[in-house]
Length: 187
Image (cartoon, rainbow, N blue to C red; front, side, top):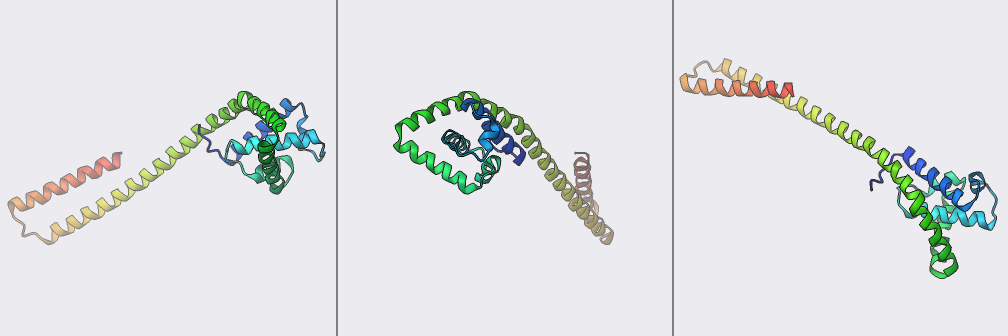
């Protein structure tokens, strides 16, 4: 799965995950983002933050924190808390696994759609960059070829003593270079 997203795509992923999971938890999104520290709200924030970071959508702690109106240190605490509870609390583990199943079945496919819609743009940008590189290379080759032709012309003008076969050979090379230049220019 292509996970390379621009900043807007990352924010879309965070917004989608939190809004979908808020519905799953039965909590209005504004309450989830609010200041209330009720157990069920804090628990939901922790689990959703953990699922968002665990799936590596290249979102940062600061991005998740900004979405929840909290700082990155709070998000680090959420992540560490969930990791700790998963290893020691079986009841918490079962609840987390249920939320993760919902996430994998219902939220992950929608996130993947965002990634797929972002991928062609990324691919298009890569192709545009490659075209610019090739154009620059083509211009450089054209310039070098022109310098080479000027050098040959100077050489031919200065050395009028060339005879028969040798002159024909140089003229043929000159024509070959000129044809390649035309091909490069047409490409």
